[in-house]
Image (cartoon, rainbow, N blue to C red):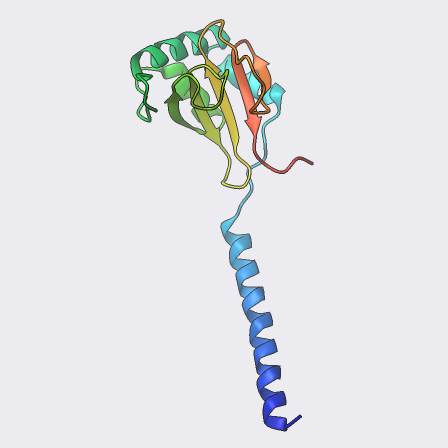
Length: 154
């Protein structure tokens, strides 16, 4: 091999390693995982927000008011649900109509917390309403409130 070709190959290899290093560090700076909350921590947050009954009643009202067949993003007049989202460090995403999340999943208020790689979704169904299927791999927190983790299971 000619020395000129060796120099080009060596330069490309060094620049490739440098690019991989930079991309890796940018990713590490941008992606800050949020620790998942346990069922017990979420149950404590529910109590601080006003308890299951209050959250479920407000979910009933939000579903009645905002779930008109289309997903609703703006939710107002639900102080306990807003407080719950704040306590867990999440945000109210939307009121989801019947069946949008899958067959057997009734209308609900959805709270999301975490980052793009490891979201936790909190489903607040109305009083006495529960999903008839477990196609979303959701866990019962209490009453009509459920949790779904999207992160990698350890």
